[in-house]
Length: 120
Image 1 (cartoon, helix red, strand yellow):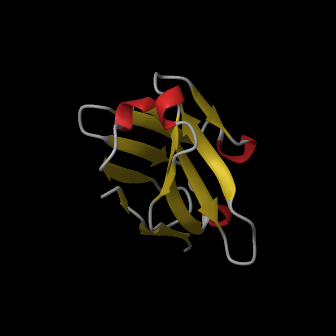
Image 2 (image 1 turned 90 degrees about the vertical axis):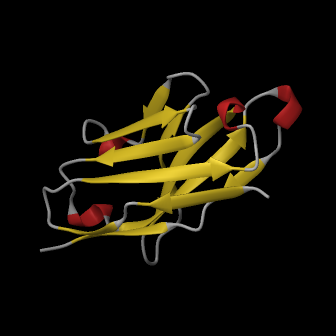
């Protein structure tokens, strides 16, 4: 059974930090590209950060220099370190896994989401 379980969300003041974790199970984590998406109320879901099966990372412009995505293949876990948080970062954050090898191309899994609220 495939599972992606996010944790680490919560309420934080502007300028604060949070670290989101996403633990994967039921598939070969190391051959999947891992992504963090977010969706704010009334807005479309947007890709925040992505990490390849290696160490290549990409970020949406609004979080560059503040957020860091990383992965630990030994723990089947992907992280999103979020620093200097702003109220506009408030959203539900979702973990996503996309098959990155021919054998798993087309496979796409999602977590249930974790709420991040940035407010004073």
